[in-house]
Length: 97
Image: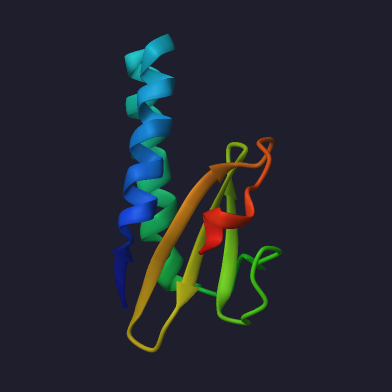
């Protein structure tokens, strides 16, 4: 099973990594490395994480990692990482359009 990353996810992750790097570059590198390891493991057990609380589709899941929610959708041959956001920040309605 292949992992695809949406443009929205890539741009949100870039902002998160830039913010972490402001404090400590090594922390940003560690966060990115560990997050990538977690994402690479999704295809092994794609239904391991909870059904999304933000979407109603059964194949949309929320992986929680260090206070961040990573929303991904499961398809027949691939998993697409949709978005990443801090759980403590307010969710805007237009974010999911």
